[in-house]
Image 1: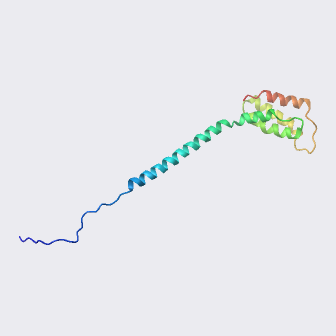
Image 2: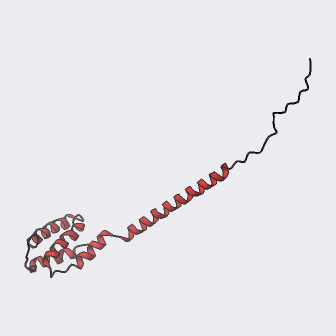
Image 3: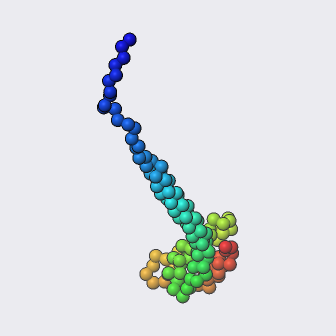
Length: 132
C-alpha cells in the first residue's frame, strides 16, 4: 500500500459558537412569571372587591332611605329595591306582589296623591320583614 502524505488545508479548527438560548429562556420565563403573578393579583383584587359590594345590603340601605313624601319616585324605587328580596321565601314573594299591586296606583300617572296610611303600613311591614 502506498501512503500519500498530502496536507489538507481546507479543514479549519473547531470554533466556539456562542449559545444564548439559556438567556432567552430565562427572559421568557421571567416575563411569563410576571404575567401569571399579575393575573393572580387581579383575580385576588376582583374577589376582594366582590366581597365588599353586597347587592342585598345596598338594596336594603336604599329601601330604608326612600323618601315617602314623593310618592311617585318612592313607588318606583320601592318596586326596584324590594325585588331583591322577593325570592327569600314565599311570604316575601306574596308580600312583594301585594305591595307592587298597591303601588301601581302611584305609578304611570302624571300627578299622584300622597301615600295612604294603608300603603305606608304595607311598606313599613315589608321593610321590617327583610333580613340582610
